[in-house]
Image 1 (cartoon, rainbow, N blue to C red):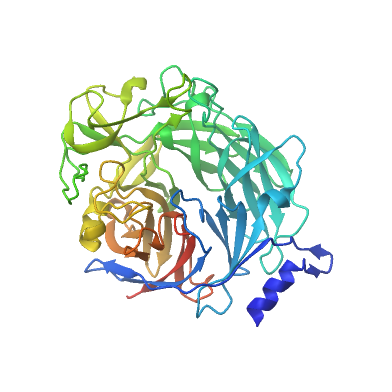
Image 2: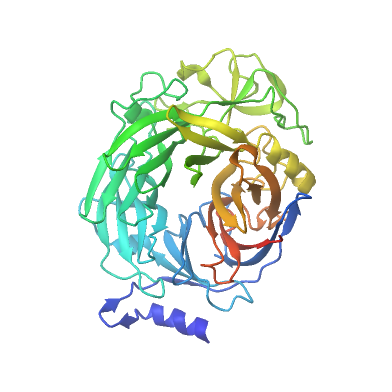
Length: 536
């Protein structure tokens, strides 16, 4: 009764006093769900189970169904973006969750209407402020070289969007955004990718700072920025052209920006609106760290001399401990391929062959190599791969980023034991070894949370699916505790497939009264809720 009443009230454009709610465009009913599997280390003090899920009701081999997730702790509401439907989906979590959650979809293009000088293209990210009174949405323009927008909606006490949003200018292709902890500013990572080909136009990468106390937006590019020798800068490009901000985390004073294709972290002083510097993350030596590189239909984890992984993190996370700042990175890896093949504007730095671009390494099966030809800072006699198939912990120092922990071969070793028949499967099939010659399990996002006396890192695996959990209470000596997957491997895209975004919710803010992890799965179109129980 309550569930139906709330939905119908919102659909009717419920008015509370002078507050007019935004009208929803779609209703997503609750659907049944099955339970997942928890693979735990012997000394793990954490139990994980699938509590419930929201299901959009369709699947996609191209992803994009449910991507980024945010949470309103006051109203106990989750928000998820769907690039496929163009909606923000509001999922009330304080309803009866004996069955799966229902959701309400808001079409973003229809909500923002006609903005003068702006043609809507896509919605890329959302964030909720610390007081749960505002939600910010990053909008990309239809033209890849046009500036994007950030739209800010006020939220009512039930967590629903209120009409008359504010609009702010952003840079080109805003990809990720976040509020500062005090809620006074929004920071936006503008990726600026050359989507029409590297030989055509390469839009400027930047970060936008929106000051909500003055309603002013400032765009900061990378002109004249300091960057160290480990940063990947393409030959003949300027930093503002080549640096591509992917993800951003922040304190009230300092932001850390992942430049994925450049294998670097940029540090931004929010008070001065200027970059302190850009620092490279280095390489994973696969002559020391084993991996399965050969697409031969078997599990074969071993080392390869003269082969190196370029970390290239996607999602990053920040935490402070004992006056030190640490950055966690999900080392996915990302190639560049723009334009149409067989045209003068086509560019790729991917090399697909059983032999590396320099001919020094040959393996059994085709591999997607990183071609170093356009990067003079790389040793051209060595072979390189996209990503490191791991997550890392870096300490922020006066000299940049110092690696203090890397999970190494852990993800592949653990999934080889947990799901051996589907090891290194893709997010479009459950075939053994399908992704070994590419990026393996493909860590996508990382979040942290404190449960009991311990601090944990949660890492989503985009391809094989599921979430890896490590105890990082001692960042220098992190240990594996759990691998949890709620994917149904009996079908190509069954259960929860392809984690894209994660959100940890502490028990004090959770509708269950327990710690939970929200997992947005872009292939299966599901928002999974994992319950986390401290066994100590």
